Length: 139
Ligand code: HEM
Image (tube, protein in one colour):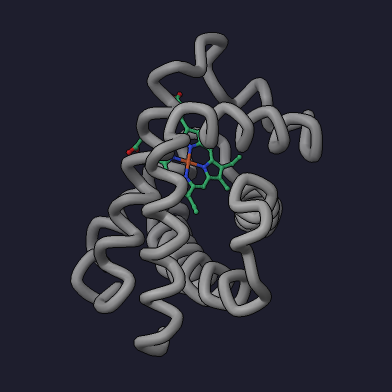
């Protein structure tokens, strides 16, 4: 459960990132493939559309940060589809860490430890539900 303050921190940083949209997602994938080269082959050669999808996911999480229960079914279904994409449970930690590091670098001086904790809490909640959907799918 996120606190009111954490929800505000997430929305505040996402607002700043919105201006960087494509640059932010491109930086994220560059960092992801550098950190975990083995996941590159899971993604299409042309990453343009994927970048847009990632951005939409971030927006969805940000908009629902105050009530992740609302998007629980959508997240479970998303997690189940990720089994087919070849995403393994251990990849979720890598994706979360790389995403947070990317946001931290892009936000430069305005990034704080409280921002980090807020994003960690939100993404952890998202990953837990996605992985729940993934395990149901695999069963
Ligand atoms: C924070 C967790 C994640 C979110 C919110 C997320 C979001 C998305 C979304 C919205 C799509 C578009 C397709 C769809 O809706 O089914 C997608 C596709 C994909 N995701 Fe994720 N994802 C997450 C974690 C991961 C992880 C851990 C991996 C593993 C490396 C991964 C690999 C992929 C791949 C390979 C595709 C399909 C690319 C394609 O063939 O077009 N994702 N993701």
